[in-house]
Length: 269
Image (cartoon, rainbow, N blue to C red):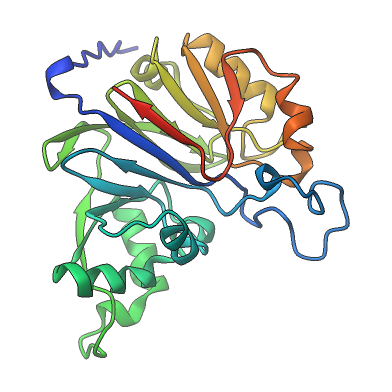
C-alpha cells in the first residue's frame, strides 16, 4: 500500500473563513409533514438546510455543493461574490441549485468556475441540459468546467487536496484546504486516503444519525474516524432529524467534537 506524505506549507495556506451554509441531510430538517420533536423544535440549531459550506480567503470565495437551498443560503450568508463551486458528487441534494449561479454570472460578467470529476459533469449536463444546448436561451447559467482527479490542484493560487471516499458504491470527493478538511456523504475511506487527514486541525465529517446507515457514517463511526486520524477538532454535518435534538446530542460528545449547525463560522489561520 502506498503511503502518502502530506506536507502543508505555512507559506501557501491562507487564512480561511468557513461558514456552514447547510448541515442537513437530503430532506433537510424539518422534514415535510414529520411530527417528531426535532422537526418541531424551536431551537434554530435544529433547522438544517441541505449540506453545503462556504470557504473564503482574501483572494477567493467558493462553495462546496449547491443543493436545492443554494439561493436561500447565498442570500442568508450575504455572499456578494462567488468565484467557484466544487462538487463532491452528483446527488440531487448537492447539485440541484446550480441554476441560481445566473445572478453571479450577471454581476461578475463571467462564467462560473465549476470543479467536478467527469462523471459528475455528465450528471450536471443531464440535469441542466438547457445550459449546454446548442440553441441557448438568453440568461441561462454560464459554466466553465474544470475536471477533478484524485490529485492536488489550485484555485487562484489556493492549494486543494481531494480526498476520495465511498458513498455506498458511489465514489465521492472531500477536500482539504491547509489545516481544514471537509468530507460528506461517505461510509468508507481507505487507509491511503486517511493519510491525507492525519493530525489535521479541523475535520468536518458526515454523521447522519446514531444508528448505522447503508451509505453514510453514523455518529459513532464519525467520532471514531476523528479520533483515528487524531484530528484536533471535529465537526459533524449532513445530520438527519433521526439524530435527535442538537443540544441533547451535543452534551454526549467529546469536548473536541461539535455538531455543526447552519450559520456556524470558523476562522482558521
